[in-house]
Image (cartoon, one colour):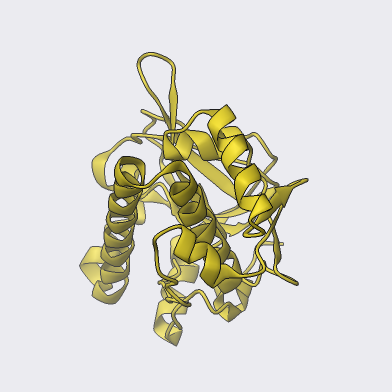
Amino acid sequence: MTTQCRYCPLRRKDAFLPMSKDEVNFMEKFKSGELTVEPGTPILLEGSNSPQLYTALTGMGIRDKTLENGNRQVISFVFPGDFIGLQAGIMGEMGHSVEARTHMRLCVFNRSEFWNFFKNHPERAFDITWLAAIEEHFMGEVLATIGQRTAMQAIAWAMVKIFERGQSLGMVTHNQMLLPYSQRDLADALGLSVVHTNKTLGALKERQLLSWSDRVLQINDLAALAKAGVTELEGRQKRPLL
């Protein structure tokens, strides 16, 4: 059964701003269906011109870009509530790929209706602008991390950001959350080798700052890990939900 926007489980999460009745009604008209994908399934391909846009309803994924020499750069990790395909919606084609890392359900929107946001729903259009600004801010922080943080600081920073997103989505129980990514994914996100990443995670575990094994991340003292990552806790900053 397709989930109606008025009953969307994400709307009850602390991560998202409330929506007015008019906004919910508009999103129900904008939504064309749902798509279920298995782990490892490509959702959008780099260079593609997809006619559809998505919101991750459940599950987690990854955004990455393949360089001309075959190396990969992980752009970001996809969480429930993330809007997928904005780049194609604005620029006509994707500059990176998106892949499911767990079983995912996606809300599907037709790109042909995308401009109605800007023509008829300025509040929703501002939400898209906000999401784009947040993505730009995050990419700036990633660049600063790769260029200026040590490996230990970089990994601590990344785990803090991931854990805070998990907390806001109700994915953390007893200081643990599912983290369905590999050490290579983390290394490719931070410009590190897998060997260096593995050793650094081991050092953070020895300092009792975090533990990551069997796809489960455990952090008992998030403030201490943030200090190690030369960053501050953001708290539960609410974001728009499309």
